[in-house]
Image (cartoon, rainbow, N blue to C red; front, side):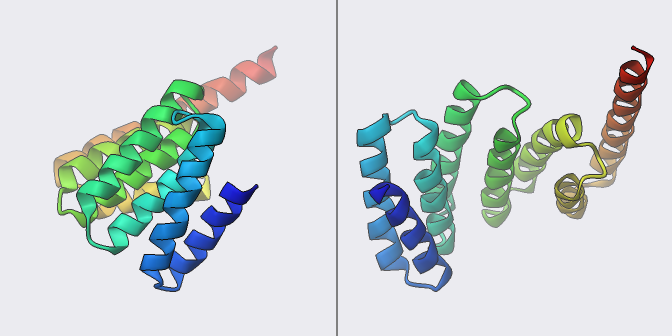
Length: 168
């Protein structure tokens, strides 16, 4: 409970610009969480994610990428492949890449996120559409064509799944 409270406090401090205090509380939260649940636990991904956001606010895209990459690896190891928290981790990595000026890496991460979101929630879900809009803002014409194909394939797959469910 203390680790979660420290993480929440650190996040509030992060949002209000108290970066030094946020860093202290988020790091303490991560340390406590890892002691209680292990360094590869899902619980540790929350303070890790917040430490990644802190690094972005401080302009350290490499530290943010490292933390977000660790979040992704933990979630991939412990969650089903189509879990939306994995898509969220891809979006975090895309944000860090974009802030670091690497639109190609951001595009790849966003595509990975969209693949999961489209399978789980559909292409018309607000979160999926938000990810698609972010990707469209980065995409070259060739990538835009690929994105349109991906969305069309996802919609066709969703229609087929619905049809199969109705036919049973």
